[in-house]
Image 1 (cartoon, rainbow, N blue to C red):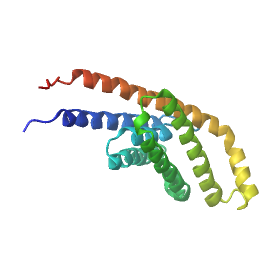
Image 2 (image 1 turned 180 degrees about the horizontal axis):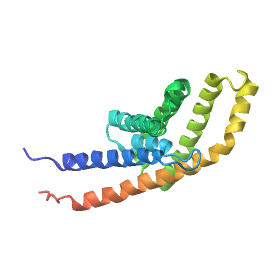
Image 3 (image 1 turned 180 degrees about the vertical axis):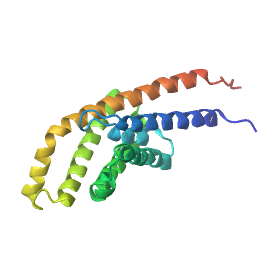
Image 4 (image 1 turned 30 degrees about the vertical axis):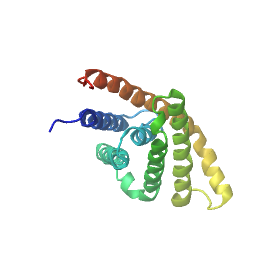
Length: 193
């Protein structure tokens, strides 16, 4: 039985998507500016581009977990394991952004949709992770004023989150669009009768 054109493109597509997600996740290992990381972009890109909903969640979440483990090994830190309460909010925000990516599936060729999705992903991360910080870390009173204070103190870092998500989403979606064109162009043409 000969493979169909669809199965021909799906295997390389999955491998390319996985490679892009893993490469982006490895960018987290390089120290740079605070809150400049591809986390939101990986989640949005994975949700929007993997055909399978299972892969859309599992590949990006696995890449995030792998990069978290590598970060802790390279920095000789148990911070991630010690702060599991706040980390769980990061993973919750990540899963919500994958869900946002699922809603973006039919618009991955639209720069406006990708940029809007990037900003929405940044907002999701900002609100969910800072809520988790406020709720679990005990630095702010557990009141509306304490929550407002927590969000206000996090605002200077939010600018970097937005810039990071816009940059990495442009890179991921743009690279994949280029590779997809190259794969489709190299695909054997089938004549229809």
